[in-house]
Length: 323
Image 1 (cartoon, one colour):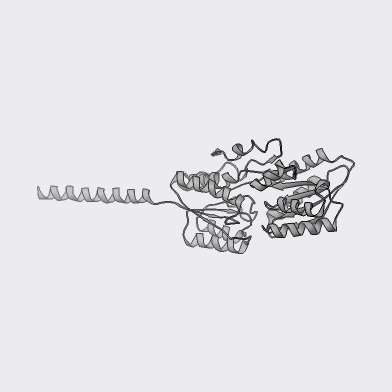
Image 2 (image 1 turned 30 degrees about the vertical axis):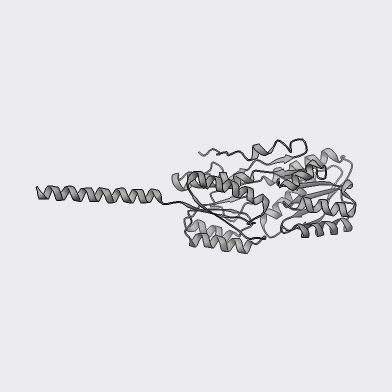
């Protein structure tokens, strides 16, 4: 009888230990790190909102990190820190060098890239971002509807930086799209804002002074549209140029409402956080992957006609299909 009781007690202890270990395993909270290119920039805080919402829904510990100003080097260090912390997954943007991304993947950490892709990181889980070819096409279509086929397009581009492939690609696609204009097209200048509105304004003022024949201004940095308007007003050329922006910062939308810029190309920064976190969660917990490596985050143009209605579409909590 004593042996039976001892056996029962032993089995109870074993089952209790197994149940405890299972519960402890279930209670282990996943840790996702979001390495943003700009820690507190208004447009990236929209991505943070989506990331925070997803983490709350899924019970994930989410860390939002990034430099105060554009710095691929600091982003690389933050990627290395995520690896050292043994994060379960990482979201980042294409400004970060490929090596720390590939190092994370080699360490068994899935990485999802948003906004600008990283061509030298082919094993990333997926890319979710703006379709840069579509962006260029939308800009040209609008320009062609405003400027006749016999008039030459003389334009300048301001981007955030030139130290990552995403910035070079977007400029090249714009020049390819504009090159088909029947009246001819010439890109007379390319400048950088580096995420600094004051620098962007100074660069645009210098451009207007050097190239007074400009009739189109292309801004592919979130701050640059406002910088361009300020410079154009100060130089007295606002009525002579068509100004485009990117992203949907509130000040950019206000410029559309005030007829100071003709439009802005946007996609869902909210889903840069929300959708990206959901995909990584499904990968970590179920081994699933997005059906496509390249995924458009809903690239559209916002003009005065849809400026009051487009927002709900891009901020929807959309769980895109997996195979």
